[in-house]
Image (cartoon, rainbow, N blue to C red; front, side, top):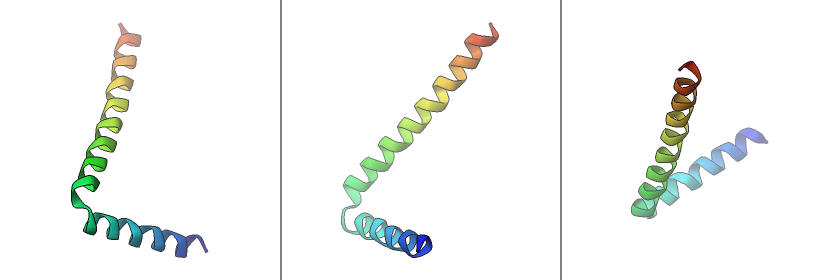
Length: 51
């Protein structure tokens, strides 16, 4: 059941990207920026902790 749901979600994601590439790119850019901020803040935390 989990595997089938995963394939359905992947198909819907690909359909969304194919039909709306502009908003999908903005969403991906936003998610990537958020992940980068998380890792940057972790780096700052450990840098401040070490000094």
